Length: 132
Image (cartoon, rainbow, N blue to C red; front, side):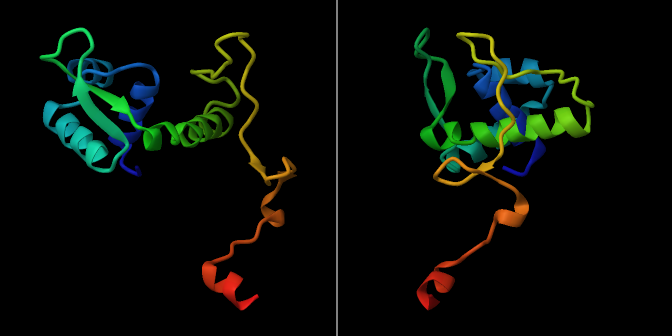
């Protein structure tokens, strides 16, 4: 996921882009690069290829469950950019499509819903748990 084009392709998927030609137009990406990135995302299980619902001769790229689970990652990166690059003047805003309400800033919360800061975190491994 760390490759730049992969993130942009995923962003387009979340915006509803599904066809090769549409990715190419929206991103201004070379066909060979787009083909390689889409192949990689399919092999990684983030996207799946399926016949278009409108024309079975056309292939669409759809997010898998694994791909959909990347939404918070992309939103967090966008929110970071809004704060640190765009000075709070976001070029793209995420809102509740039903109400228009803005998304709350993503943050760290425990399973009880308590907001956490970095000082509240500890990283543990299976080995740490076994030793306890």
